[in-house]
Length: 465
Ligand SMILES: [Zn+2]
Image (cartoon, rainbow, N blue to C red; front, top):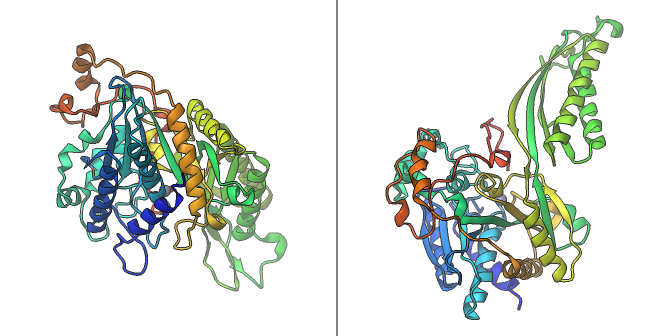
C-alpha cells in the first residue's frame, strides 16, 4: 500500500484554494478558507468520518472506534498559510491522517478508540497577528480578548467569525474535555535541513523549543569620524558587533540552543559619524528551558563584560517569551516504535518552529512526526517534499494508530459537572448544551498543562512559527 500519490494529489488540489491566482495565500476565515474546509470535509466523509466546522472555524472529522468508552486520539495540523506559502506546511498534517483513516475505512477496519482529525483554521497568525487561534480554542486556552484583534482591513475577529457563519460568543464550544482525550499527534514537514542532510525520510520530535526575544539598545557616544582618536571612542556599533559574535559563540557552545541577531540599526547612521546608539534584536531558542536560560545568562554576562571594557551601556527588554514544550515520552516512544517497525532508524530531533502541538499541550499529551523537506525550505513556494516520504509517514502513522493504547475516559460524574463553572475563568461562558455533544467537547479540568502553554505576545515580528 502506498498512500503517497493520493496524499500528494490532495495537497495539490487543496493548494488551489488560494486568495491569489499566482501565489498560495490562505488566511483564516476568508472565502478560500471556507473552500478549503469544504474540500477537507468531503475527503473526510469519503473516509467514513462525520465532519463539521467547529465554533472557531476548525474542521473536525470524527472516525468512530470500536470501544465507546475509550479516550479519543486527536490528529491534525493547520489549514491557514503564510503569504506566498508552500503546499505542505500544515496541509500535510491534515490530509495524511485522512488518507490513513480512508484506508482503514475501505478495508472495513476500525480502531479500538475514536479518532478526531482537526484542520485548525489559524496557526500562522497571518490575518490577526495572533497565532494558534484554532488550536488554543480546542485546548481551552482561547483568550476572548483576541476577538477584538483587527486584520489589515480593520475587520475584527469578532466580525470575521460572524461573516464565516459562526457565533463569536460561542468559541468556547470548540474546547475538548481533558479526560476524554488520549493525546494529540501532528505530522508536519520539518521546515529545516536535518533529515535531508542525514538522508532520512522522517523523524520523531522530542520537544518544541522555547524562545526568548530581546530588544537591545547599546548606548555609546557619537563623534566625528576624523577628529576623535581611537583610544577615546565609545563606539556603539563596535560594542554591538562584539555582542553579536559573543551570542553566536555562546549558542554554539550551549548544546540544544540556537541564537540569532536578525535586526540591527545604527544611529545616526552616517559614513563620517561614530555610531552613538545601536539597536538590535536577539532570538534565543532552546530544547529545554534550562539550556535557553543558561544561554541567556551567558549573553547577559557578555554584555556586562563589553560594557566594562568599552564604556558603553547595554539596555535590554524581553519582548517575547515561551517555554519549551516537551513531547510526551509515551508518544515519542510509540512513534519511534512505529518507525523502527518500518525498518528505519529512529531519529529524534527538536522542533525549532512553533506548531499547533504547542497549544494542544495545554489540553493533552502531544507527539509529532517530521517529514523531510527539500533543502529545508518552508514558508516559500519552493517548499517541497516527495510522495515517497509521504507514503513512509502514512505507513508509520498507521502502525502507530494500530499499536496505540488510549486508556479509558474518565467518568463524567455529577460532582465534576457541578464544579466546572466556578473553576473556569471568569470570562468563560455558560456551558449549556455541552452534555448534548457526542464527542466530549467541554471544559477541561483546572490545573496542569501550563508547561506547554503558548503564551505569546504579539511583537510585530511575524510570530513564533
Ligand atoms: Zn505549520
